[in-house]
Image 1 (cartoon, rainbow, N blue to C red):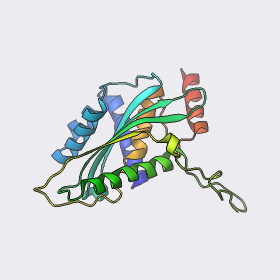
Image 2 (image 1 turned 180 degrees about the vertical axis):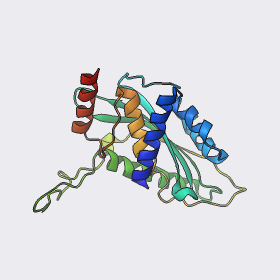
Image 3 (image 1 turned 60 degrees about the vertical axis):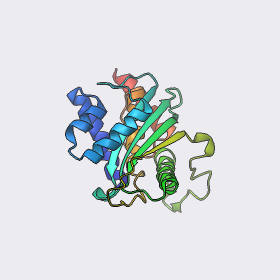
Image 4 (image 1 turned 90 degrees about the vertical axis):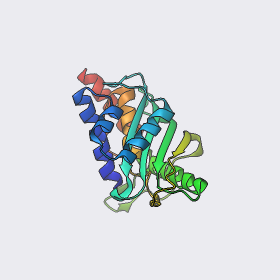
Length: 217
């Protein structure tokens, strides 16, 4: 699901660009589920979404992505603010907002921890984690050769829970992992105008895409 939603929600932004429509407005127009719309609207409102029809290319961007876990469980939208260093290809996550609807919520703190932990795990996958190997076997054998997200790389993280006490509870175990890579990729696209398609988004890969985009211009 992580890879599927990465592809789908990245493509949603590409479709919005082709249609000349803001990415949030595009999603809301094509969704019929009011609960899905509500989490997107909540995430966009909390992060202070700046509507656009094309990437700003200001080295600092916003991105959003949505998914309903397993199509029947928790609704989750993630809005990301990120900056990109064009000289190094380094992505810095500045601020992240998670908006979720898991139906009736019994333990808000527990749900927030679950949602935020899922984002952190997926952000680490998206930006850093990659098993390296050669013809003889795996070469990623320690935290130097298989880096994970560090405390110093953590963004400001905020969670908005849309409690629905009148509705059944929904599973939220891995609700935020799936929208995470597309939200980051969409923020990078807004920041520098390049579309990232291969995970993880290492500085080398980002730099190559930025340089390729500059050459094309």
